[in-house]
Image (cartoon, rainbow over all chains, first blue to last red; front, side):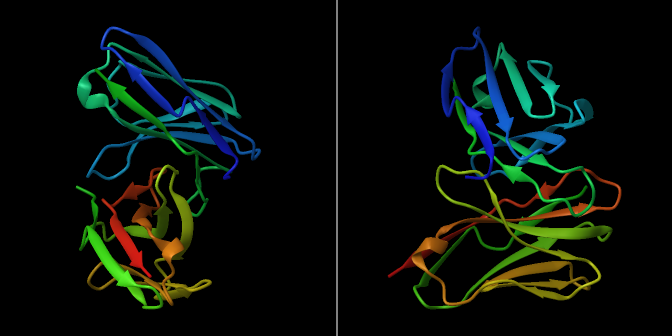
Length: 114
Length: 112
């Protein structure tokens, strides 16, 4: 276990549904990240939070809405998604966002949009 | 644009062999490189990293080599074991960026 947990592990939702992904880190880190991992494509960074403040939004559509209430928790709120949004969504955390900090990943949420 | 890629999507080896996984990167300003391992049903796990001021770094059974001249990174796994079967990603970051830029991954299959 890496100290980063994600729930749910699997999620199937329709295009009109609203759902949320949750990430929690037990490592005392102050930075958290959302990544999208699609089949046969590299991991894509979506959002970065440092000390609860969003520091990076990598041109992510507004149907994905992140929330970081504290340094230990990160949410990804989903609404009116498209089938192409089906992917593995990975959360990561790190101690700071410096050049050499190691990011610890959770197991991911496998999302299927029908 | 910046991109990091791998030469081969799959690699199959016999248990006990040495494995070499390659990665090419395009951003000459990249200063830091990491190899990750992702097993089925799990998130990526850090293996080893290297700064651009180094050519080689060794860990336990793993060695990373960096050739800045041709912008090439490789991961060598000694005495490969079935437990090494996974997808391996290289990633890079430059001084200006927070984000890691990942390659597509190489699936390593180890047979007994």
